[in-house]
Amino acid sequence: MFQQLDRLNPDAILGLMTKFRADPYARKVDLGVGVFRDLSGNTPILDCVRRAEQTVLESQTTKSYVSAAGREEFNAAVEELVLGAEHSARRERRARTVQAPGGCGALRVGAELIRAAAPSTTVHVSDPTWGNHLPLLGSSGLRLDRYPYYDAAAHQLRFEAMLERLDRAAAGDVVLVHACCHNPSGADLNLNQWRTLTELLLRRRLVPFLDLAYQGFAADLDADVAGVRLVAESVPEVLIATSYSKNLGLYRERVGALIVISENESRAEAVRSHVLQIARSIYSMPPDHGAAIAACIFADSALRSSWIKELAAMRERIQSMRVLLARHLRTAIGDESFDFIESQRGMFSLLGVPAAVVDRLRERHHIYMTSDSRMNLAGIMPDNAAYVAAAVAAERTVLAA
Ligand code: LMR
Image 1 (cartoon, rainbow, N blue to C red):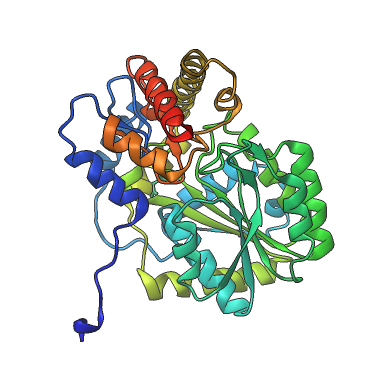
Image 2 (cartoon, rainbow, N blue to C red):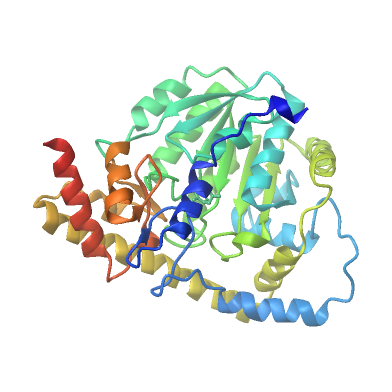
């Protein structure tokens, strides 16, 4: 049977992670996989996580099953963190939240839900988007299409083109939107653009699927979901995939949730029953350990305020590296063409250079980024920013010559 299977290429992001690990060069620079790094290059366990984990271990009395929906106190806290305590969808009991195995699990369950409800739906994803969006959503059998979002060479959002394309989408189609810290571009919609988008979604009867993997990495926990809350205030049906890989650093624990908002309470109950059946048919139940830690942090005011401080420190470190890299690039290149890096948000920016330059940066300078020239700014350190900038300046010129 397996003779039918040809060997596949590794996943673009995970394959790069393996290549980086295998490179023995001492000054290698990892701007690849999206994990936070501190000044020593480590991806630390947050202090609030260590403390909460201790509490979880000490208080846990069983490893028996939880449920297909995961931990209810986690789900309730997630819903409040994303929508806010007073959100109309919650007041009207139209929101249902189910724990999932990471943001990826939430996206996949969401895609399966859409397919169960309306199999001929097209999901429109941004161009560019995170490399794993296409397999995650596409494997459910849904048709995918792309809307223009960001011009990597011009370093600009393509908002007008995005609206123009979505205006031609069929009623009932789904639009996947990055809630904040767009991956890979770092270019987000401002609040006015969210308003305009909301009007379009309503007018064209499109269903937003909001991917929220970086809450707290742009400005703060509340500001980063302003767009999400706005959309969920007026659009009757909304899906939201959340992840706690980045903002709690729980990457390998696979902590996420799917929030689905429906038109009314009875629809919401029906939707929940389908979500649970989908979960049961794929993985039965989400892993508990990470969600138990997250729930403990969300519920305990001391742990929560420690989290908010640690989250701010991660955000500020990345932001300061944006400033530093842009400054070194300005010096190395002699103009301001890379200043956009400074004003973008979250972990990533697209350098906006051809894949051939990306290859040379890796092969000649041991600087690793995905072939679309996405850089994880958390891989920039005070002692490698000048090196990276000089390498970019050199390779750009070589290629242009
Ligand atoms: C990334 O975009 O690099 C991260 O979200 C890790 C992943 O799973 O791709």
